[in-house]
Length: 82
Image 1 (tube, rainbow, N blue to C red):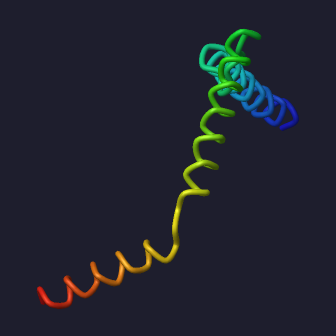
Image 2 (cartoon, rainbow, N blue to C red):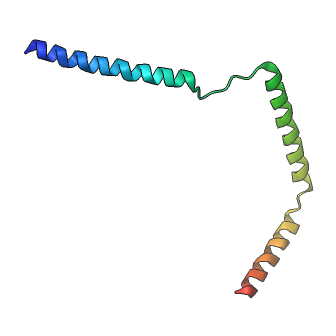
Image 3 (cartoon, rainbow, N blue to C red):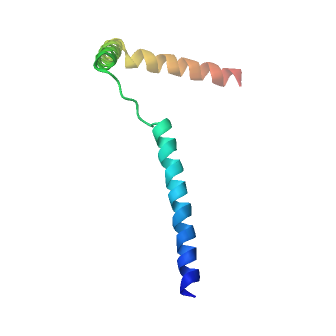
């Protein structure tokens, strides 16, 4: 009886080791993260800063009242078309 229990535990342990090995190899071959070198990091940081400056410039130029007016006109046209 004890030998059968040990045999079952050994089979479960063997299956677990196989599954964990497959997961390890899969994660090693296809990492979820990307490591960038310093040059690429600085280029990405520059790009993000440029995009941030562009967005801030567009937000300064954005007029909410004009946008609301255009939206109301668009809604009125859609209602007339119905």
